[in-house]
Amino acid sequence: MNLLPDVEGWLTEAQAARLDRCARAVPDGGRIVEIGSFRGRSTIVLARAAAAGAEVVAIDPHLGSDRGPQEIAARPELGEQDTQIFRANLERHGVLDRVRHVRMLSSEAPLEDAIDMLYVDGAHRFGPARDDLVRWGARVRDGGTMLVHDSFSSIGVTLALLASVTFSRRWRYAGRDGSLAEYVADGGGPSSAMRQLAQLPWFAYNVVLKVLTVLRIRRGPWPY
Ligand SMILES: C[S@@+](CC[C@H](N)C(=O)[O-])C[C@H]1O[C@@H](n2cnc3c(N)ncnc32)[C@H](O)[C@@H]1O
Image 1 (cartoon, helix red, strand yellow):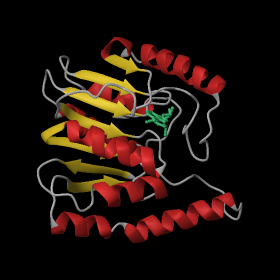
Image 2 (spheres, rainbow, N blue to C red):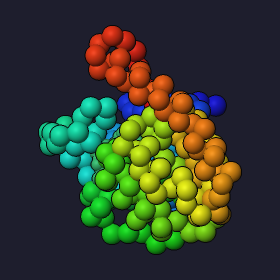
Image 3 (cartoon, rainbow, N blue to C red):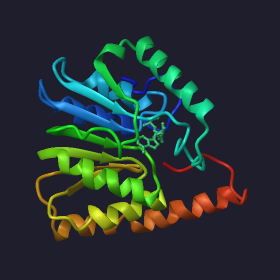
Image 4 (cartoon, helix red, strand yellow):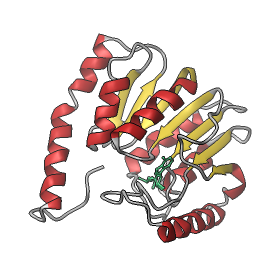
């Protein structure tokens, strides 16, 4: 079954399958929080997989800032378009009522309690990415999951992971599909850290691809 909705965004079929599997594991009455929804590609995957009684919270200020590859500065007119298209996409896929959109920066949004599944795909710069991993990650209940997009592909996200997750005693690395890494809050340790450090050659490869793309030596998809 094709899990990917026909919505613009950055998520592969394999990544959608991982999000789908993790969202299905969230119990009825549980809570899924997404940081960075863009036009709803991943939000729709999460909302379709969530149990009827699970809450799905989508945090995205839609300011047109930190929007996608090389789109850091705010462009409010694009952000406004994103929020309208986001809503229309959710409606078209029958999940508008299933999602609570918090139109705020994750750093300003009220922290949700007892998160069962956290999906981090907001601002990819080091500071905000680390803030999401630390502040929002702390709200994931023991045994819950945290998924991080652009891990081992974006410099900011990868450094944020190295600074706050890779060597933590809480987060166990549970593998990745492309740049989508999965962590379980049931105890990190040396083997979890080693398995993450083993991804660094792939990270270096992605950085080279990005540099070649920026220099226009390479054409092709931005790696994620
Ligand atoms: C890479 S896109 C998300 C892609 C989306 N998950 C998908 O599947 O297509 C990043 C999104 O993060 C949002 N964003 C940027 N800064 C943010 C912040 N501080 N808090 C929450 N969301 C943020 C942007 O508005 C943008 O829509």
